[in-house]
Amino acid sequence: MIRIHIEKRLKAYNGIQVLRIEKTVTPGSILRVTGPSGAGKTTLLKMIAGLIAPDAGTIAVGDAVWYESAMKINFSPQQRQPGFVFQDYALFPNMTVLQHLQYATQDAAWITRLLAIGQLQTFAHHKPAHLSGGQQQRLAILRALAIRPRLLLMDEPFSALDVKMKTRLIADLLLVIKELNATAIIVSHNQQELDGICNDELVLGGEE
Image (cartoon, rainbow, N blue to C red; front, side):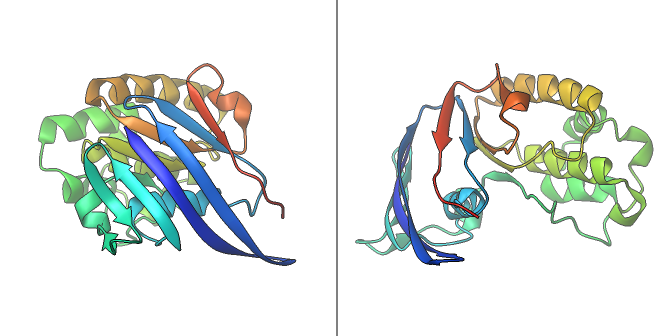
């Protein structure tokens, strides 16, 4: 069980707004997070990952408390070890596709499988600058999966993919998530692309 009960002050065009979230996520589920730009969707993922600290509250995963403001508990991202797909991909410019995956795992068979899922076998020795936007996005997804995460955080992970590739990748992704018994939290502006695969939803307020 993932318990999120947090507050965070966000800068908005009309001043400061407070993001308040109370949510319990069932293990093995896929949670879709929606809401307008500026509502705090990306901030939520970064707080769960430990990249940003909430102002107050608690984040607990199973029996482990990752963040607790009153007790001054704040696990590092390395302690939490989620798989994270950043909206801007956050790839290493000097690493090839293969090196990105080898940085996360030394399991050659797993790497081979991931390359096939992302259809990047023939691009294994290419660096990000020589990949299309869609290929870079697929690499970001594969890198997040490489560590076999129990928690997968994805920020607009399919925005650069065409419909055919998106449909195929989502189908493969669902199989991997089930195999890993992972919980996925996916931020998306496009609700339709996740219809039928998410079994829970969190709608954040706010405005541009």
